[in-house]
Amino acid sequence: MTALREVTVSDVLHPPVTIEEVASAAGVSRSTVSRVVNGSTAVSPAALAAVRRAIDELNYVPNRAARSLASRATMAVALVVPEDTTRFFGDPFFAAIVSGINKRISKSDYVLNLIIASDDPNDKATEYLRSGAVDGAIIVSHHTSDAFIDRIAAAMPVVYGGRPVRERERDFYVDVDNVEGGRVATQHLLDRGRRRLAMITGPTTMPGGIDRLTGFHEALDAAGLSPVAVEDGDFTAAGGAAAVTRILRSGAEFDGLFVASDLMAGAVLTELTRAGIGVPEDVAIVGYDDSPVATSVSPALTTVRQPSLEQGEVMADILLTLLSGGYPPRETLLDTQLIVRESA
Image 1 (cartoon, rainbow, N blue to C red):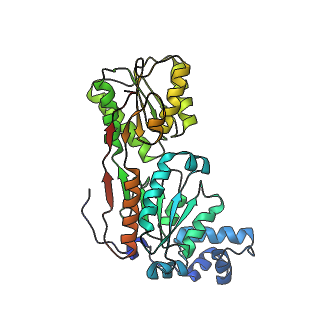
Image 2: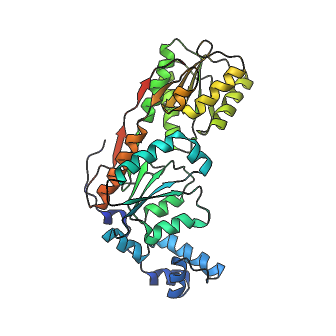
Image 3: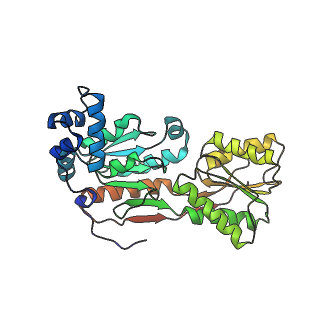
């Protein structure tokens, strides 16, 4: 945890740029810039591209957004999820996060908007958020390729769920100790006498995926062992099934498997059963999340519990503190817990 530092809403904003400066940089009139900012279609493609480029280069925030930040006149905040709808509605992790955020926001004077913005096609979500429609945002499940979230963070106070992929001094985030969680999961397999370990990771474009893999390697290194196989399962059931199929087809012999999410682990159990491999007799499995999936499969999953509901509440608390002019910590790290069941 880092020491507290004084933060105000103005810290989160770049020095103001005028609409006239944007017009000059784009080589268009002030009225053209105004039309672009207000979403008008009465602008040529060339002018639209020039204005957007100038807005990006100058980091221009429309005046009404700045007024909204100063007065909190909209009394609305956004939860931004840079994922497709299939992943969002299919992963229990998001249900817990949203429940935690909503639990806290519903007790405040703010309303919560949900923005699902995979790659944000045509910058629709970005422009909506930067227009002053909300006073602040919580961003979860971001990837290294999600550059559009930088434009959102430049326009308003933002709190990230998980360590930002491009961490900056003015970023605020609430994360789970995924390195320790990955280490504990792997150590449990070692303590069960398993020595040929494989892992199915989340996306290595996400800090959470990277950190759980780091914990896996740290535990193996400390035991003087090397992994038998590592495959990316992308945090989805289909990805987990495909990843374990690749491991089986490779001929790798493994007696322990750390799967970086319960959603993937449930699918892995199905594939191992189809292959005639017993769990935990032949292969012990440890999942991650302690989601409802962990107790809906057989054998029930040994897993690493991450406090997703609490994470949502804390993120909402930090954003509300920022919007009220308070001074929250930049970094908050929550602990995980090993939950032992039947699979390992």
